[in-house]
Length: 96
Ligand SMILES: [Zn+2]
Image (cartoon, rainbow, N blue to C red):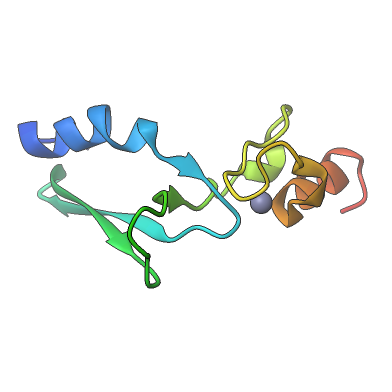
């Protein structure tokens, strides 16, 4: 895939890295690719987001392979209650 254009690259570089992940995410990222080049990046709401609510993204598809504890905006400071972290820990402990 070719390098993204300037606007898409700005979102990829300056916006997405600052969004936290959550098991109760409220946004997704959609990449529009044309002829192998990312021409647009859109952050889309997947549910109603009240004013002042933090925008959060889902975990990566390979989250269970992470050897470090996940960071979930919903369960910040109480990760043992996060269902995604529970799944990751079970996977890491060979309970899959
Ligand atoms: Zn969580």
